[in-house]
Image (tube, rainbow, N blue to C red; front, side):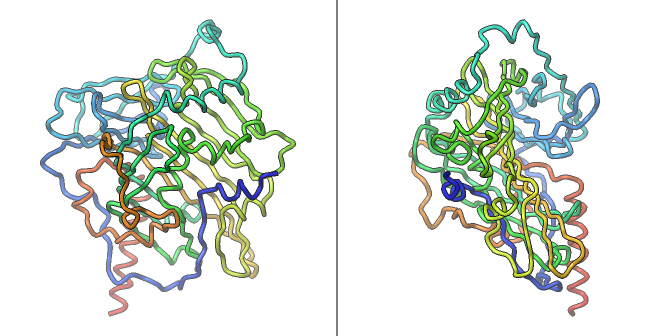
Length: 434
């Protein structure tokens, strides 16, 4: 069919490279956020399901009337930094399928803010009002209206990007960056550009089984999950007809009626396509979120999509590849707000009894934006290349003061613990080398 075309459209690549077990840098890294800046206040807390107290992952926390926002991490925790000149605003907390909550900023404390959200229940009688009858037609109309419903201005976004690598459940690598995204209008054929502003990393190579996994593409892996800007990466020309779409349920997001459209590739399609859910605002025909995964119909085919280089005698294949994208709304227009890519791989050595399981996660959250009045993109030499391996570009956790003023995704406790262990190991290796 169009297998090679689809191969070329994938934007997530795994790199496998041999490294020595005893490789350590010659300096230690400090994982910290830096010292408080006098120009902002910061608020820590968690967002949970009010009934079950279960953490809500990827909930959005934003300051009303501004472009300032952040999201909760995989444990439901958040860190929000707000300029001190904003004192009497409201904080809006929202999550898929839950009622949005608006809280005065004055009610927030520096620490231990627990925000409970209630599940949004939609009455059946409301669902039947003006309900579209054809799920496929609704998806096609939504994709066709990107020029009407999404940003039509050049926009300069500040975003926080993170990559993590785990061997089974143990964190072995963390890379983070603040990037500038030069977002072009959604109806423009021009691609977005990314400029790397600051990056930091920490890796414990001794836990990588003599194989260092590197993610090629950096921020582009998450940026291209923006379906409305880059529909060709999931719904290439004509490929919508290779899927079956169906209505699943409805919910409410920011008091808007949202239909959840399930989709999966037709059984007659053998090549690896996608399956998942599209969250569509029925009234405006707007995609507000999408959660989907790659159907690994053929292990070898899927491996060729992602594995660019590996040692001889090693078999590598993906067991799970999942994506998510969330959009936010301001002034009647929607824009890219958050996306993530999660990949799980098995690494099978010919001379070893047991295989290794690695997971790689990349996520990016827009924390501020403004109009790019000139519409100019950065010069080529200043742009992040699509072939970037962020860990090679990062300079280490050596500039903690820089991170103080930026809204970042709060690190998970497991990541913080892993970094502390890496620091101790690096310090021991330095002492032993003296």
